[in-house]
Image 1 (spheres, rainbow, N blue to C red):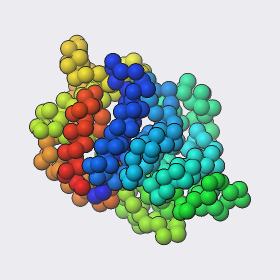
Image 2: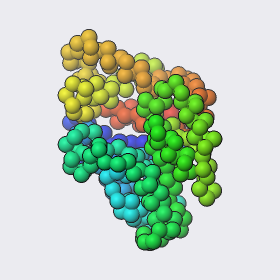
Image 3: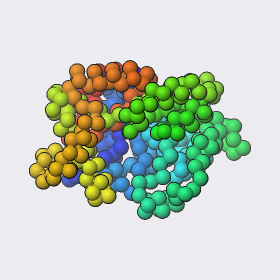
Image 4: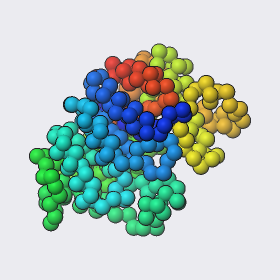
Length: 322
């Protein structure tokens, strides 16, 4: 599998929110040095723990500090945007950094009702995602009635971030698919991927391509790696009570807090879902995943409070797969 990174620009306790963006740029520079294939950033709106709400803006900064690594979005949430505006943003990036830009597209409507209202979206609106992707592709390929500028030397590659029906959409319109989250635990995952590859309708010279997005953290021992996953897991578990996905906290500060039995159980269950461990443990788990999915690419998405430990994890993972 090719190896890539997705960084969500997670904010950290004790740091200004804007520092998360600088941290993302610094991680991208290190990822290029380590030999990662792609570096992607995310789009989240109104989330206290995430600083990245405008992927195209952040990618422009990342591109200015790197030279070779491919850059992309994991992803732009297309229901929030007009397709031609997204096309123009990523054509500008492609003009600045030729041959390096990817465009991953998702369909999230926002995490909470206030966010959806702010984005002028409703869960009752018709799902036009597939049609919007096709329209966006027409601007990138100069087949639309309106020409988006700057005109690219080559089309910007598109990817569909998919769960459930999104896999079928990716096959029908002939695009690579990125899978992550609960869909990876579905018992029928093999059938879903077999259907994607079987039903793939090639567009131009496209072919089926499966990227697996997975939280991965590597340390010297399994126990140390599991502790690295705690800040992200803690934020997720707390959000179920508070409704707020908060900043990453230091492990020691989290351990010093009082947990009831229900919280402790949820934390342990969530930690079990993260791919953590020593290099040997992680290699074994990734080999099992590759056997189960036939994935072409791994998009690692791990995050933790300790930036030095995160950098070491990225380096260990690169040593396993690059």
